[in-house]
Image (tube, rainbow, N blue to C red):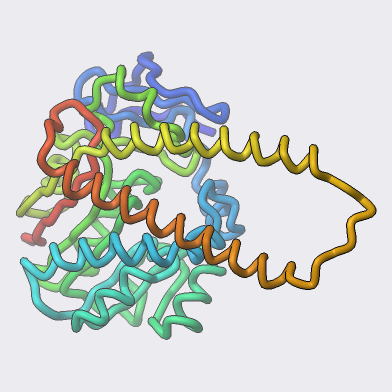
Length: 320
Ligand SMILES: [Zn+2]
């Protein structure tokens, strides 16, 4: 663990705004960046990914196919407004569903994923070329790309400025970097209570919109477009849904305890009933994903967003 300073202003901060899992997030008084300090070492962070010890496991990435594809299609549509076809690299590709959707739309896709379980899934199941060492100019035999994409990866980067310089190096001339991230550096602290997990220590930095512009300016990019979506309605809805689910689960547990009868003869219909229950559970999960999607991208697009939690999609062009 090492004490660090704001990566933009080179100053330390005593203003602790997040405490989670034994880690503290400090807000830079000058630019609003929230940075974890003390920060775990790079070796420890790489170990999290290499051994599937991150807050979100490989299994949950793979099983979230329905919702991941839904969100992927939305972002592929945004990219298509700027470039219709070309080679695309995704950094932190997860289970690869975004790239699979992008391939259906005509892009030539490549993945970079540190988690070896996910990297294996991307290569073997989705048949997408994947390399699992950290981003470097030598990946894919030094190939350069038309588009580099990442979604909810920026906050995980150990040194965002260095990583964006590498992204710049891996892009062709006038290539695009497209990424989705949050705006926590801009958010009033009264809204922090709606965020159930800050995912420390997976997340290391939370940016404001000015921080994103500064990051791009310093690493040779021209800001092209930002799409902003308020996620406050989604966070409030999820919080309510979690409460309802916990209530239902506790009722079900109480009922099971009441009805438990050790002499009961097992029913031959159990596997069939079990299958139905699994399908029903999946149906409910998918319906829930659709509702969250609509709340985020339809309602979240039109309601007030200033100083409230947002997800933003940024498009920037390589200029040097
Ligand atoms: Zn700062």
